[in-house]
Image (cartoon, rainbow, N blue to C red; front, side):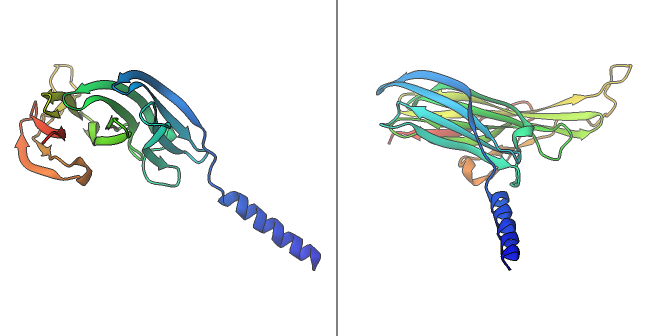
Length: 230
């Protein structure tokens, strides 16, 4: 009887250990330092890779409030959907200045799309400060797609701060280019490897809404206001 109970306990303990979440350790990818009206601000971009392949990307800000503030930019991979640590291509931060809003940090997360054969995507988050670290805008700024073996698409969105001291926004210009495989005569092997019109992203990127307007494949203007002083 005691031997049977001991065996049951060992099985229960083993299942309990297996059920524990994979251990995650944060490590710094990049650090930025800049000055706000309230004083110096330090920002860290961190990644944590779990043993099951999961990934957590965070931004840590010190100097924004009385205590360091953490903002989760991405979590996924492992047993969850989305890219994990093995799909990461790059993680980076960049400081930009937006009229009426001030300093904004741009975080880029580039990764290989899970299940694809080399197709990549870059997700961009704009982060603002001023008492609280917060997300201002999230969107995909680069995506590659293998249309066929002789034609590769690259869709890119350039973000440019615009406006004045009363009204600041970011202008997003999208374009689609193609990279054809060429033959010995320097002509594309796929004659149909040409850009196609893109739909324009609407405001409110968090909704995933799409505009009805079609654009020429080389350029367009998309305005995503970040702040408006009324």
